[in-house]
Amino acid sequence: MEKIELIKKVNEVLAEEFEKEVEELSPEKNIKQTLELDSLSLVDMVALIENEFGVKIPSADLVKVQTFEQLYDYLAERVK
Amino acid sequence: MKRVVITGMGIYSCLGYSLDEVRQSLWDGKSGIVFDPERKEMGFRSALTAKLDVPELKKELSRAQRAYMPEQAKYAYCATVEALRNAKIDQDYLDRHDVGLLYGNDSSADPTVRAVDRIREKKDTTLCGSGAIFQSMNSTVTMNLGTIFRLRGINLTVSGACASGAHAIGLGALLIQTGLQDMIVCGGAQEVNPFSIGSFDGISAFSIREDEPTKASRPFDRDRDGLVPGGGAATVIIEEYEHAVKRGAPILAEVLGYGFSANGDHISSPNVEGPSKSLRMAIERAGIDIREIGYINAHATSTHVGDTNEAKAIYNVFGDQKVEVTSTKSQTGHEMWMAGASEVIYSMLMMKNDFIAANLNFENPDEDSAKLLIPNKRISKHFDTFLSNSFGFGGTNATLIVRNL
Image 1 (cartoon, each protein chain N blue to C red):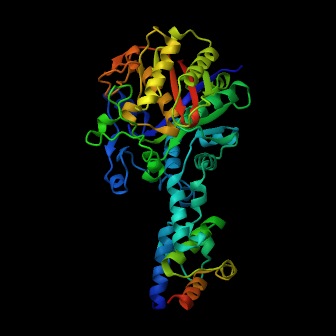
Image 2 (image 1 turned 90 degrees about the horizontal axis):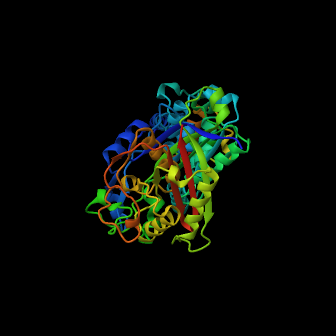
């Protein structure tokens, strides 16, 4: 999957699940703040990513994925 | 002992999604029962069920709030919003007082089954999502309503099988009578999805009159062949009398008596002694003469042994003192964990509007129901006191007596 295509899909699935407009999501923004995630809904984001992209983000990696840009990069390296 | 009054009601049932709609359905003798082809495909012996839509609530609640709510919690939310509004209680009031919450619920199968399926298939618990645990627990209704409405009094789920809703109201009344709480949100909720009652279907408890869904639930009728599962939620706001007067609340009725007992007998077959004891206890605690009771809302679910033994219990207590007895389950099917609360509301709607809804499909009595006065057509009647029975698996019994105010 091309990275631009990946970014588009990531934004679409996150926006739909967490009831935001796609335009609200931008690379430099903090994921938790933008999607208003608490510790529980963060679990839903991890499950969503795993279901949609087949990539499991372990807890140890999750702390390094703070912005959307970091999430795009993380997935781009792992999505087959 | 302090007096306990009802100051608000709300309902979400197969007869309607508001008190007005439900009152009209009771008046019209509408049945909420349908044939559900999906159940047949799943291997159900009986595909009959009450039909109601799961409310979306996207406008009312945040995504995070909805994520923890199974269907019955959503029904309970709708019923509670209506009940609080009718009781003239707003969020500011709830934030400034310690309001309790006692709700009947005895299963949450759908989210449990889905989570287990996911674990088995994927071998990864994270994929269950954050909502599964909160949706799966028996206390899901009270934990959801308690956090949504920010309630800070007692917070408990009452699991007493098909008497759960009645026990919730009865136990709430005791807490108010003894001064431990001024106001409690009480009620009962019941999920309607096929998973929740598949195993119940498996013990041949349901009517198989699938070609005539609206005639399948026929409490007390000679030719009844089992119950029809239903569901939804019903909320009753109960309050200490002086407290209600002081805040200018709409005082609708008084909870006069709560009787309870257990059969200590078979796990599914009810007896006569247990229910009779519950009836007598409620009457004694209400401190009234049975002649004051103008209507009995029976538990009668349309099963052979259940209806027979309840008819015997009622006759044991009332003898030849004839009073109208009906089972609103003839319209709704068996609302199980919700029934004790919803049937108080159905009875209240009838009491406030001077009628008794028809016991649908009561065409021929059997030996025991012939001794009772069971109208199969709607009748006009003014009454000021009713008695409502709720009995459940394991032999748990509850009886409530309510008086008009």
